[in-house]
Image (cartoon, rainbow, N blue to C red; front, side, top):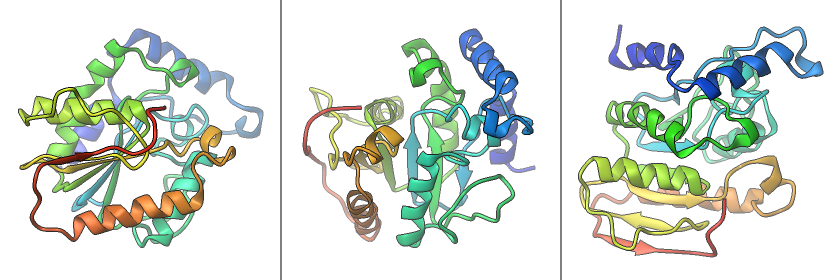
Length: 241
């Protein structure tokens, strides 16, 4: 058994946050009418993707009736439909849809994790809950050859910054704020890139369009093609979730 498989098993068995344990299981019992015949995963969701990934996408948390139902990141809901369609267009996935864990989806050079591994009420994990999950983020990313971290939203951006700080890397002060298109490069660390979250709230209102998502993924590919980096920080647009 590989270290990543062992870690995934440990993640799936975690019960460290009573509020999240209660909520994820409640959602799994009550279900959405469209999924009443499903047996929900209703546990913490491990990462998913290529174990040789140079690009790691950091999300917020599992969707209540998406990953909390299917057991795979960004699978089975509208956020995942938007995300995987873009990954397919960019060549990071073998197909444009992700509906179930056994649907044949494979990622290429890309891996998906989240700041929180259990679905939180109102999609808002508490600082303590994020702190308890931080070790899983650290340990999973340490097992991957990541060179670019793509953070979806302010919470994922902050979780990624804290991950780099725990690695002892020199993060600029004041700490760089999240913005769509923001980029942080620190010697010895993966480049951190910000993108609005692929939530329905953002994609259906036009805050994050397909063209914007495609451009962020194209920027990720550009960064992966660069061997040498110098420390630099750039921001774009305003801070938002």
